[in-house]
Length: 111
Length: 113
Image (cartoon, rainbow over all chains, first blue to last red; front, side, top):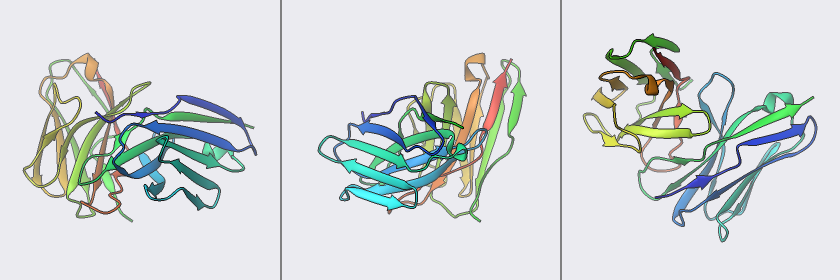
């Protein structure tokens, strides 16, 4: 079945950029998503990208998609302590199918 | 403000008890999902539903059942709770088609003693 892989931990200093990487196996993915989970809360959609796009920028967030390598990344510019959370990559293929999630990357921001 | 609510934030039950976890969404979404979240394992899909009275098994349905009698409500049932079902349970809902964003509830942390 489909699989989504991401590293489990990332630690950055406040003010630096964070880059969280994700790889996926489903070549028919149509949408790819980044969700954020703050401590004690559910997941919240941060951003998403359609599979025919290479890049999407939204304020401090930049999503890059390399469809050939099935690689997705999330860059957070000027990382703040409030960005400390778990970030989940997810993908969906065509049709009304559930999202497939990675295991999540725990981002720790050091002041 | 769209919402997915779960009946309890924290729940403690004993082994062998029957446990009901309730989820309600107010967005008229067709799809609803139940996940469990465990450290190092991420989110694992237990069951999902595309419509009232419909259910589909996810990746780890063993030991669980679900009920969807009304569009807005999706219940997860542990017929006989066991200690390995101690976990965080997350409910989500989404529209069919389009970008299909899944909206999540705050989670229920279940402890089975």
